[in-house]
Length: 321
Image (tube, rainbow, N blue to C red):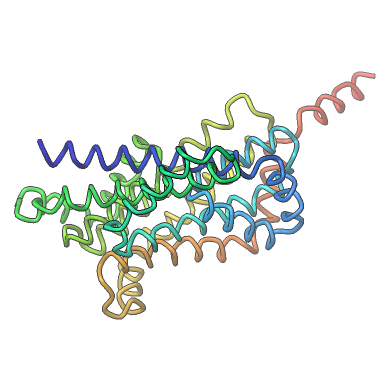
């Protein structure tokens, strides 16, 4: 029971930090970010780069994609501009995996303490907002550190070890990853938990990669929810995100044994947590490279499948006349 409570507490801190970090940064950047976003998405390459950078800063691909869908719905961005941002967000979220794989959680109280002091004793918003960002980053890694310490005794539990070994089945592992992400609404948290387990040698590389693949699918749920009551351009952005992730995952499952071996070779004896982080990054970058040439075709197909209502209505009126 103590382990469960500590894991839930650590996960709660992680999710709290991610949500508040995204909100604080969006508030800090303000309307200037929207103008900059529109300016930097003139072509597919710059849109991917922009989506990557913003996701690295906000540390949440879901937040970036939801924000993009909102901007498309508000006609501040076009459907075409959103495609690159969505693909870039998938790359950007892998940087958090690389950071989580580093053993920096033990130093997390330092930014928490500094950020808290500055936010309490300094009244200038130019200082307090960055201070809160620093504090939330500290809370994020402290949450992971708490989970890491909580799961340590599980290595001596045969039932848990046997259950984790079952996740080596790619379909089962992906299913668990998708389900967990659907519940906690954060693929970063799911991948973070897997990397945390890897640090304590509680998960194998095949199981870790399988759960990571499922997390990529589970994260589509909240972005699809963001399209409810949105215009067709925004709906198409949400569908593209689902299609992009689903096809990438299917390919990943088809080549799963070869991909696991590939990660082992390129990681050249790196710790398990680093291998899983590498697998996450290479998978998402590979998906973007694979889709890049086909984006114009996918855009045309989605435009044909979901045409603008106004245009359709105008044609009906003209035919009636």
